Length: 157
Length: 272
Image: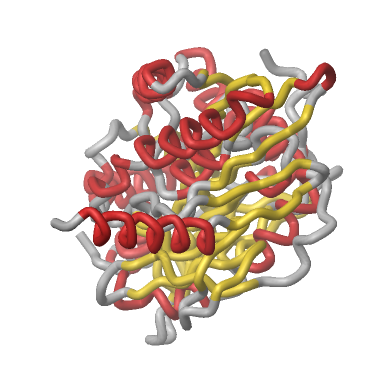
């Protein structure tokens, strides 16, 4: 059993963590699952040795309810959130400054602490799931499948 | 303790609480945070939405369940029932993933405090989150198995190979290219149930149909199906009918791949 926590900074910095699912499919899954979805993917990442290593990651997304401010996106490694986006009306950032609004969760791999918050831009004004997913996933370096094959028109039961 | 000291402590506490109560506005609703922390280090956010007839909807906008889910705590039926019980004790409801209560002007402060208390109590499980170290990833085992066992059949093995069908683009997880004539190109696709087995099978079916009458039709296809216990029989049959071979693994059998990959690929090559 490999422990990839020591490589968290490399994993977070990788801007091409590929999840084999399209945004329209995520939206269909939200509709089917009450606004919550979790996807697992073995992402191929260069951990610094020049070799691509498969790292098991989970992507947790919520777009439940009409208030965009309650939506969130997070990336988990070994069942711990190592990256994520959400909104609080009041929080203290990782340097102790009081703030409000959208922020990204940083991760301290030594203490396994995911409560280190850093403000992020570009989320104010978002009012659709598609906009939110696109911006949140880009911010945490997740790439999705750009091709949506849909499920409704295929000749299978 | 002297009476005067008690009052001065109370005054200081009131002052502190007043300073630490945040209020803002979000999409026409007031949002308050009280000076308490949840176990996931949040100030509980309570929304107040004024409705017709002097009624207020006090709620958490589903932020509690959303933030718990982001940390891997899913809203199971048992957990939803637990949240309902907490809410019920405090005169609040839990529905559609949110703590909420309708109240009149006179009950507004009590409702804000009650919803706030629900939010705090609902995060108790955060303290139990522990890292879970998974077995070696399936992709890693396949890659290692191919690398160890390449024999003289294959010149190279590529990962994540994009192929163009007649109507769309697709990806094969591994493609082994032949080293000599008579050996077929072998493509491997890993199908995990995470994205729903039905959707996975249908996408795989589209890949196969879409690459018919292209150069990829000649490739031998192996589908590696993980957590096979989560797949319906009809869905499995669909994948089997469209593959040269399938490798089907129950949860916990992933390590078997290190000998299944050589034996199944070998059998395919020998049969070609």
